[in-house]
Length: 361
Image 1: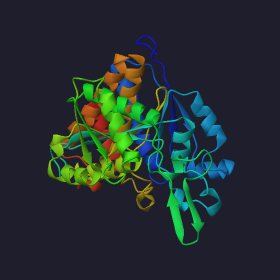
Image 2: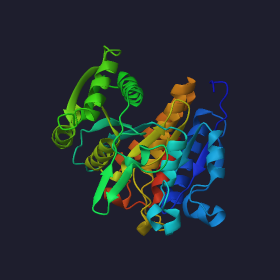
Image 3: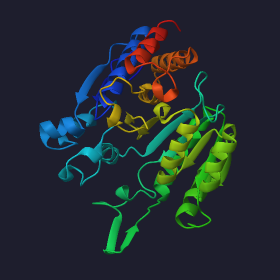
Image 4: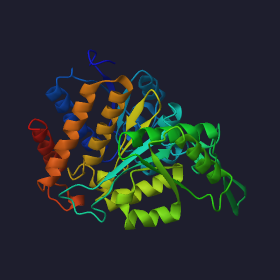
């Protein structure tokens, strides 16, 4: 899509729990941003997963949804609540995992940034964790069919961790490309001192890729040291690249340090498609009470728009993303926040404040 071709078809997947609330809040701010910057309205394609899909199709991730996603540029996915599905619907991959695997969304980009107006353990944090999303120490992604976990006896359980040069190279390129647009620093996180073959390969291949980006400073840390450093000196880090499990753990830590997991945004992407998905879960205990923080998914949509803008060389998508990001920051700076951030605003009140600021900036 070029600047003269502004019509986008994007998927909208509400999911379970607080999903419908935060997805609708995200759609509202994206629609407003498109209007403000003069882009044609988005053609939203609403698709079911989770309990809605089980009720209609007998499957939490129906083939109809996956087939439709094949023809879309990107989509916004709300959280799912797999733990609440009937046992027969918990045997396969959860909905988001099935989507990641089907479309080889190998890069999971997670932002952690403190905001003025939000009390944070790490008020100077502003970093991105680039997580390899297709293999590593996550057993559900390491076998052609089925899980990479198995039990030779009832008292022994094993898990297979897979690391390939191809996957490491492509995630390393993602990290270094992102760093060139930021503060030009990449930290490789691994545990090669105890896993020299698997983690050693990850570390060494990342360093090989680094040679193609001479303007980017690069170093590496063991994952346990990295967790401590995120608490002690978070401002020292810009872009962190790591394998699947470590990326999951470190990004949750960084999200809490920067204010709340309710602020933690992420993007799952391949070279051709992307899925905006908040880091947090479905929070069924507050579903339907208008208390959920929509910020994480709204910022995930910001990342999605920038990804599309980069892929398609489309500057207007960047302007729309900037509008949303600045409106959210201004809202927080004004003291408007949901309860997880110590505020009193409801989901709809926070969203309306963001929408109003979209038109002012």
